[in-house]
Length: 465
Image 1 (tube, rainbow, N blue to C red):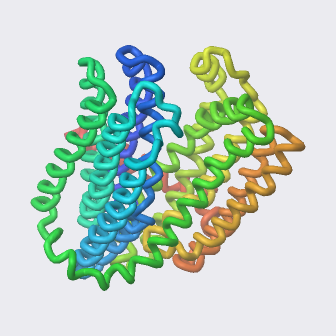
Image 2 (tube, rainbow, N blue to C red):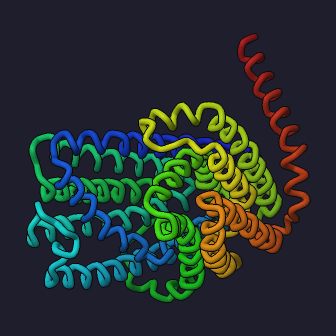
């Protein structure tokens, strides 16, 4: 990458994020057989259905956590610790207030409404289902607060440690629920165990953060309300960017189901899941470099920001190409075993969706560079407009070309996003697209060669000694 500190933090961040992806994948693979071994299909289905209700509040922080994390990291890197603390306390106050208000009203409404009939619950009565929801709401509230704790680790330059601790919390939550289920517990006991472990983990992380980063304080949060005003604009803009991605991610399946039918949704989603392997690579790289952009900006190191921007873009472009080739090589074998041959392998759709992911690799570095310094208002509005236009175009394309029409619409969306992201990055970093591609095509490989030579010389020197 660049200087030793940046390279080390980035490498550790990548390792922590890869571990997190493996952790999540293992949990997803293990969950279904374990639940279905000890619960019947109806009870498991009702558990999954209830779990979706609190998920609607998962975005109730409206982007304040991420905006505050950026602000904290930038201000700490700039030596303005008081402002970093003020941002932390403001976000803590706002996120807690918004969630408690929205969650409290929703729970009150659910208590008085026959939601169990609306959800067609047969195994769980009103009181039992409400208890499960209340426990899951409590877990989500604590999870949002844990996100603010991770912002503290990020601001202190300890993002990898925060990510590693978060991975441990997720695993502990899963193991607690599975232990209850395997011992004969029902949905209320599983939800209570989930919330209890989350509370214990939050308390432990909070104590560790206060010791590891002594300048983080919760006291005085009620006096930091003026800092909320500074976070409102970037927070809502971040929420807008998130919604833009969510619109087409979820809207694609909805449109296919409406126009063609459920079988098209299955075919599209299974192929998209497999072809998003390169997308996982992009997200790991992006999440790991995010704090480094904020730190470089806080220190006023524009050259470092431009180098990071070019290096990450090159990593994304070539990394997705390599992983796309891997999917094309062994993807059909994996797909047939994964779907048990019940869903047809569509090589044309596979290639098209891999192309969509590669197009995404062009602009992700620019997006992260912009949002890491709270300039997401440059892309939020255009991204939302692009998402709406994409869904409108997809409607017509799907009617003509079927599932392939959706892939065409998503490819167009990726190109449009790239144009917007490049323009924003040029405005913020003064890094024109032609320089980006010049580095990605040629200079990147020279940097890789130099790095390999340095590593080789170091290993040889170590062997000679």
